[in-house]
Image 1 (cartoon, one colour):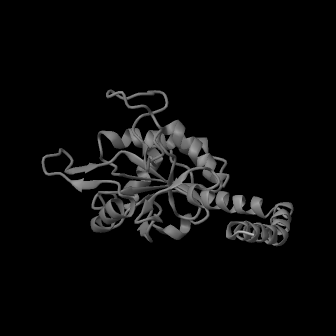
Image 2 (cartoon, rainbow, N blue to C red; image 1 turned 180 degrees about the vertical axis):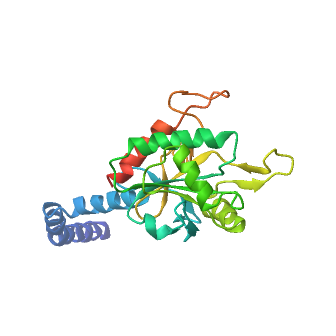
Length: 247
């Protein structure tokens, strides 16, 4: 018998042994749903990254970005911290009561959101003043009355300028700054941030799969578009709040 024939017999023997030992194990794994469990683990990983709602976690250095610890005074003179919002879905904005331009529009939209979720105990709003030397608790309380802010979990918050600027620019990456040639001396974003029950910043993704990060807070549902053709995102924000409440 040639050497080639011996080689063929050896290969056939190895295949036979493999089949006897491993094929029954593979069959048993399939019967035992091991393959399905592997698929389930993949789904669990995807849900951990996007949540059961499908809303994306905003990441910083590859890790989900959580709201930093904060401690402010609200319109009732009470100390409010990030722990007061634990277990709640909430929306964050930065504003000041004497703002003549975007703040009134932002807060009319925020009141609309408040009223939309008036029966939700696990929903709240945090409005941080960027002008603490003017926006004392008494001023914030009068502002709340003027805008018909009634939700007990909507806090108008004030602290030192350094504290609020750091929270906005570093904690939320929402721009707030002083501008010398501006009428009010400040410039700030009109965006809203959405926070889940565990304190993570969340948002839906755009058409390219990238997180939107923030929601336009200035354009109302009734307006639909602004003068530059940007579409309102209040409807979108309401939808996403509801998704997080159901997580």
